[in-house]
Image (cartoon, rainbow, N blue to C red; front, side, top):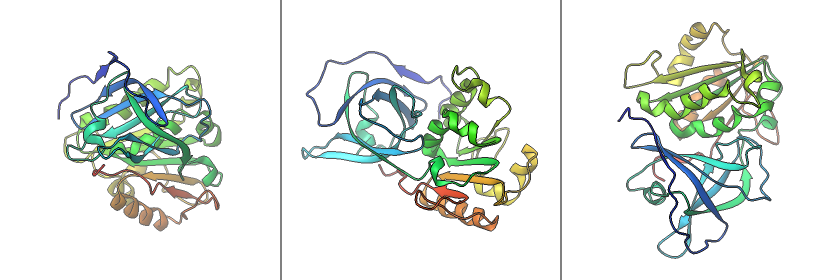
Length: 276
């Protein structure tokens, strides 16, 4: 894994044939050799809640769209749409998607859905955002959403990756929040960021599950153990991660909610894994 500065694409390619539900790529940043983010134009008719996902993709070799669920990483107020993705060499979609450049087209089906939304949680004091890898994407949206700081006294972002460089997308976003003209003042004193690694030495190490179960994160941040009266949580990662974290949260007495029945925590079940 390289520690080099992320590379951003700024040179546009000639226009291509118009795809169905097409949006134009406006920027691409390669954070590591396995991770990249990109921004595309936003359909004027698209309305979504921060934390939701849409189906995006490219035209497959068979002439049919190859689509996968991607969380929208940009907040609901943004004029463009941002996405954060892993690169899978043999992945049907990302093996090609990782090569997009400014000016290219992607397919975007403008029907946002998802459970990582404020409406799916009961009111609380603290909001815990729990992610591994590119599961950070929906929280990149929520961290830039004013409602997040209006609803909660504290927001805790726990994000675990294997190596330090894999944290760069999230760390850069969090560091820039203080200068954000819309929410900079709202974030001050409310957001607690707790990034960890599992392979490379870092200031904080260990999996989200281990740091929750052991109580280490509570001790490090000076917070009480989670309880259903005050704490709310959102979870996004691999299927195994989601199952493990769900069990831990239920052990703290929190109950899983949904859009139709708001409770103390929610899990994004449509997160795209390493096979995309």
